[in-house]
Length: 468
Image (cartoon, rainbow, N blue to C red; front, top):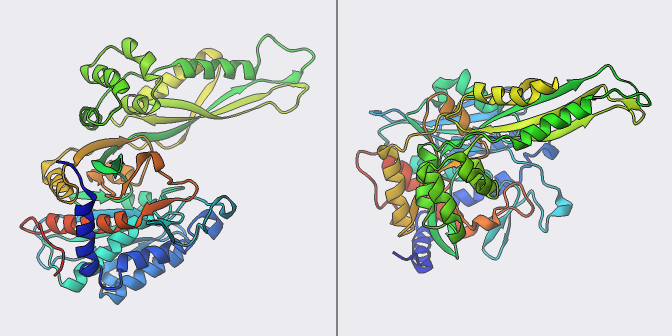
């Protein structure tokens, strides 16, 4: 079925006269959150943002017992709020967002980054999409349900973290020491997935169900050094160079999991014609040596299909007239979630050891199994998506980057990234200049989340919850 904008505009009209008539709470919260600089230039201080959200929640009737603040350090409080069921019959649903943002340099933006500017149907501002829109939607919807007197059959939990873009200590702490606050049957993450606009039409609802595992290594070649006028046959730099050249030639084996296989199968409906042969070869299990040369030409497919390791920093030598005493490289690996840490470490040692280069892990490896495509979760997501965007296809995705979902999956909470905010994939400005989301797209996503959570926490699927 073809997707028509008039249908969406009709839905938006209904929402503007009903669900968002009360001074558009989600938009107000979004404006206020963006105006709080939670980037490094703001002192990495998340307290004002958490105080803002806490104030809204308490004004709506949430008690101190419903709100928990967990802070690894004073400036980075992580907020957890629980909407309690009077008679819970199922385990809770956890909903996730983060309130910190990456840096923005005002001189490089065409609008002030730390305030919301509305231009031609878009909201601009740092963190507007990554991920303060998610936080605003979750908080506003929780308040809306409270005001309506909604009685869920399970607790609803919102987790807002303070350092997802940096250390991720908040998610680490909550999942390791405060699991009782966030433990749930499954989690829904606003910081993943999207509604993909192709030629202006909503064609694909991307649902993130897996992430590659992030891990860093330090490679080092050492040498006694000496005067450069009497060099030896080999040097630390030469040995490191050979190691990095070998690493650049190394290819980890191709291995599709449930998520990446489903992604490629469904992506064939949208992929460029020139990609079809490669996608077919990956799905058919063609031998690596028949696919690798072509896969190298497509960085995204390559990242989806295999583990990757890349040298990202190099530092060597101490004087132009001295034999270098040390050459150091840092290597960033993004590991398929079904791979083992040992397989990656072994591959690095295989290219390093022959050159007398040592390998040291410098960032922890956290296993994060893909979330199953469970019908009791995915069917609700899919059915409601097709009500909002008729004809849309739901596509599972494995992120090549990382979110806080790696921590929830690590402790056994299946997590599904479904931001539901529509956008052109060729105009993704997260972490970049003039970050923006569509005004209408934000309103539709907020309503989608409201209706989805009510579906998932009621005895009967809710199909029409827009208020009269």
